[in-house]
Length: 126
Picture 1 (cartoon, helix red, strand yellow):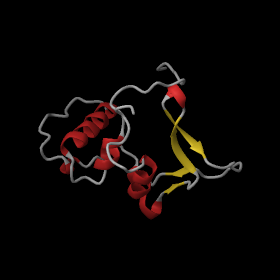
Picture 2 (cartoon, helix red, strand yellow):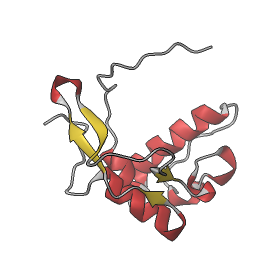
Picture 3 (cartoon, helix red, strand yellow):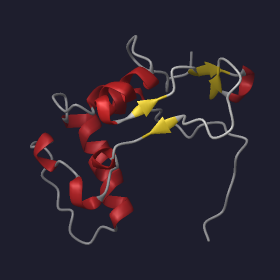
């Protein structure tokens, strides 16, 4: 099994449901599955209706510079001055992965892959 698979028995969608709480929604028929040599993908276990909501993320759970919880990683001491917003979010996620054992995000972040995924999707920055 690839190294980017969750280290414990928790499914990423289950972890997201826990993070979102009652304010968010992950469709109950969504599944993460391995799709041959291409890695894992997101699939529906039944036919979906047009306009059916699949994922609803509470605004407070969207990571932005203004709502990063640096207090959850007190062991992180490096300066964040001069970082662009995207860079600061990346550093925050890396700090949570290393130091944020008691963060509510910890289990989810530990489930994310470390290597670049094998994806058929590609795009170039504009």
